[in-house]
Amino acid sequence: MGKIIAFSNQKGGVGKTTTCVNLSAYLADKGYKCLIVDLDPQGNATSGLGFSKSEVKNSVYNVMIDDMPVADAVVKTCVKNLDLLPSNIDLAGAEVELVYIKDREHVLKRILERARGSYDFITIDCPPSLGLLTINALAAADTVIIPIQSEYYALEGLSQLMNTIRLVVKHLNPSLKIEGVVLTMNDNRAIISKQISAEIRKFFGKRVYDTVIPRNIRLAEAPSHGVPIMLHDTRCSGAKAYLAFTDEFLSKQPAKTKSNK
Image 1: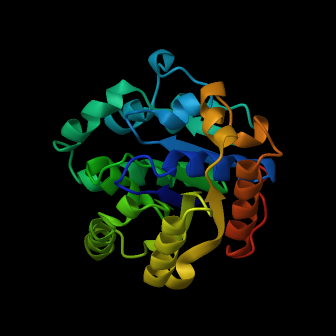
Image 2: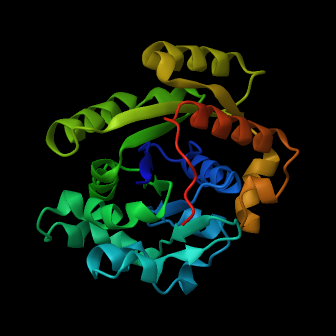
């Protein structure tokens, strides 16, 4: 049974999608069967993997609202073993439509439970908000990874995110755990980055990954080319950091064999 991991932070621009896409791509490259669920109406994971959001016919919206089978909406990506459940602008209306669905917080959970057996890892790129779509992701996930930018404003709203996770654990998903916290967009030359990193490590303790993702222009360029960093520039500091992050992530997982699906 595949592990479901939500990538969540209600603050935008913290490297959430970049982390979700690149961890998933490196896991797939190592032979793990992976599915990215683009749950953000902005569809950045979708476009970042080379798909035009305006041309996506079947999306996560159709799966959640129209009961379309996951297999009918999933697309193959440019990375072997990596599938995508894409997003498009239709998803923007899903928050309103979900309100009228029975047990609305568990719609995504019911869907992914049926798909779980086909993948080693299912990663969910959450929208930069704590609305009903994110609640669905947290209710469906086994764990959550929190990307945090090493800048002052990144600390704002962190307590709100943690409170949301606590409420989800209490009322919707008692088994949800924090997989870890990853520091992104780090600039080691800036004193403030070092201070904020120290504060985050103090707050989360051992749940913060040792690997830190640097600010890197090649990393920022990759989505515009529709590929993860491993297909854009394997030698840049961003690629090396995400490869190291993937290795560290895997080192913390229970021993599991790659699927032959």
